[in-house]
Amino acid sequence: IDTPGHVDFGYEVSRALQGCEGALLIVDATQGIEAQTLANLYLALEADLEIIPVVNKIDLPAAQPDVVAEEIEALIGLPAEDVIPISAKMGTNVEQVLEAVVRLVPPPDGELNAPFRALVFDSHYDSYKGVIAYVRVFEGRIGKRDVIKMMSNDVMVEPIEIGIFAPDMRPVDELTAGDVGYIATGLKTVRECRVGDTITLRAAPAKKPLPGYEAAKPMVFAGFYPTDGEDYGLLKEALEKLQLNDAALVYEPETSQALNFGFRCGFLGLFHMEIIQERLEREYDLDIVATAPSVRYEVVDHTTGTVKVIESPADLPEEGTIGEIREPWMRVQIFAPEEYYGVIMELAMKRRGELTGQEYPAPGRVVFKYDVPLAELIVDFYDKLKSVTRGYASLDYEFAEYRAADLVKLEVLVNKTPVDALAMIVHRDSAYSRGQKLVSKLKELIPRQMFEVPIQAAAGNRVISRANVKALRKDVLAKCYGGDITRKRKLLEKQKKGKKRMKMIGNVEVPQEAFMAVLQLGDE
Image (cartoon, rainbow, N blue to C red; front, side):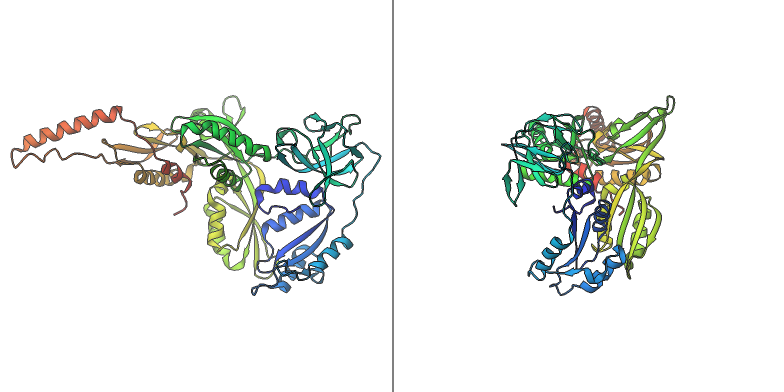
């Protein structure tokens, strides 16, 4: 199993590790240990896996296998002389790795006569066999005609086939304790057969599931709208298909006055959102407007004290009824070379980060520990971090808690009408500067009309910034040669009246770029 390094997919990694007895820790000889590598390593150690350290890419001129081996020893405590230096590209020392796997990784243990229990550590959708669950059998045995039962939702089904990987799928008659194999369930959605669930038999079910199952919780939400309203059905179909293989993606229909019909989608993180958006555009040939990503807030009603969870700025209740708003905070670890100390501190401060600790795991390397609000992380924290450190820093985060904060809804009004898709929830301290930036950005992007268009940003029922898009006007004085000033004034007044009347009834199309502008409000 090759585990994804990105923090958004940490849950899948932790499930996959449950299916293994050992793991190869592969570190790049030119880069050293990164934050995600370490995060995944801790997951592997928690799962009691035998770790075999390997340093790869030793054929590159910039490789420093000895330095990296010492770093592994300092961080993890595995002796530097046990680290196997390899070049997978050249095939150097690969046989040593294979021998180490055979020598060091223990055989699986499991009770053959107990009721059948298997952990689903991955799954994919096949149009003929339905959902194919990749399983690690912990106890008991299963024959190919046994009816199985999912323990998290009691779905029962007779499998189409069971088998092992060798390395292609090979059908077998039974799987027993200690085996890793697959069960083709014939189910139609991955939601019925989730990663981390326990499979048992209908005839003799196990008393309790294997520990550690949790449904993946979306952290970041955004609205996806087709640019062409007629593509709504296609977008719905595409999301359904993507969800077959991606149980963490959630969506529900949503309407917006500015963008018409679309979906409110939930993702594990910003990276996950970008992947889904790219797949919709590339594989399904859809043109999509994505609204600014937001997070899940808890709003406490100040009279009743009830807590309401909101995922979209549009759902935020009136300011007078709110007791407090809580936002999610994340525990962040940043790994970086020491020379980027200052720029990282500065970036984290700008994003309301609170330093909770720092360590020096190896000479010239520093680990920062921060608490940062998720809303500040999701915009472009990762990109900014990579750019200020020239790509050398790496980042890992996990959910910490909800904390009360002074948050307001920042609304944008174009020609006095609010544009719901441009609204966002921001910290009161930054509302003024965000509002100003947004207004001046929109002023450049909204095309001039036949009448003057005011663009306003409002926070908490108060307009905090305004700009006008000037009207296009005809030169009504062109036919007056010299002549009386009152004649000119009359023509100008007449023009002004007409513009005013137009403004009363005119509505303004907000172009696609304007929605993208909201996403790119950096710290310039």
